[in-house]
Length: 137
Image 1 (cartoon, one colour):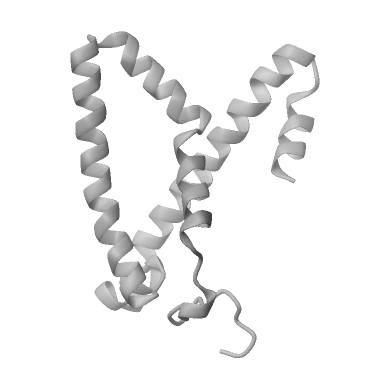
Image 2 (tube, rainbow, N blue to C red; image 1 turned 30 degrees about the vertical axis):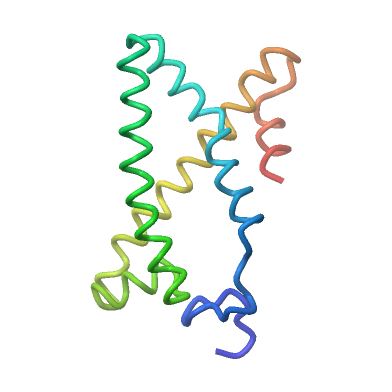
């Protein structure tokens, strides 16, 4: 496909792949996200220290194993999640996992924007709609 810089229908060539530093920044962004911290704080106050520590270790272990497999497959093939789903489920079948993934990402982004806008609005009195527009752009 001429002019497709997103490699939406084919593997990403080695020369266009991102390095460890940029991927680390993405992973840190997921970790230091306000919704993640809020969830951790809520979980932490409801459990004993030992139970909280066990929940964190087990949760991260499960997530780490799952994402390690996904990362290995993605790095080996250079294919996006949508293309991997297309090869697994066919052209029509790939739309469901892609729609679910896209929907959760839009929702997650919306939660992040709201968790920025609402506290800033309470602290400054600036209209929440303006803060949302500023944070999105």
